[in-house]
Each structure stands twice: as C-alpha cells, then as structure tokens.
Amino acid sequence: MIQDDDCYLKYGDPNLQKNMIIWKVPDEVRFGAVPKKIYCNADLVDPLLRALRLVKSRGLADQIKTWDGCFNIRLQRGSDTRYSIHSWGLAIDINAFENGLGQAPQMSPELVKCFTDVGFDWGGTWKRKDGMHFQLAHI
Image (tube, rainbow, N blue to C red; front, side, top):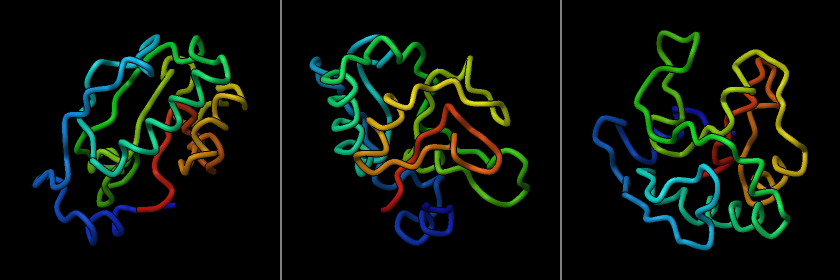
C-alpha cells in the first residue's frame, strides 16, 4: 500500500499538483455517477480506465451510485501530520453514503474485485474500515 511518504518522493509537495491532469472520461466508461471529467494524477488514468471497463463488462455499472471525489489536498482523517493519498489524485471514493469511515462496508465483493484486479487497494479491508476508498497499490 502506498503512503504519503511514497507520494512525496515521486511527486513532491501535493500543493504543487505535479502530474495532475483533467481526464476526459471516455464515453465507454461514463455510466451512472462516473463524471465526464476527473481531475487526477496521470498515473491513475490507466488503472481507473481498466477498473471501469471491468465494472461495465461484468454488469456492475448500476452499483456505482455516487462519485464522491478523487483530488483533495487534506490530511488523513485522524492524523495531524500525514496526507491523504487523495492529495496527489491517486485515490477515489464511491458510494460514500453507505460506506462511511469506520463502518462495515456495503460494497459488493464483485465491484471491489473490479478495482483490486487492476492494482487498487480497497479501504474496506483496512483495520479502520474505509469502504468508499480505493487507491493505487503501487506507484
């Protein structure tokens, strides 16, 4: 799992927004709550595209009910020093309304597998559950 230290080494201070792009999401994977454009790290695009293609091909598009963000420079919840991976645009949140921090995740295993199969870590397996959260496993 990547940490903020890894992101600092590769991208520097998140306020510099190095490697950030506006990704115009292809029509083929723009379903449900997936937005038309996502401001994200360029390194997120390929894995996210592959994950969304799996979601669609496996007939799970209706399970992405809300898109709750990608890029947000902020500290990790509960930390005074460590930055969230969202700060570098390398994480997404979906279906936050039913997958709150510290709650039992309500994400289907099939949907989760679409993301983990292409290189995402899922917050639903962490000690402090974060079922809405997916982030790149490696950079």
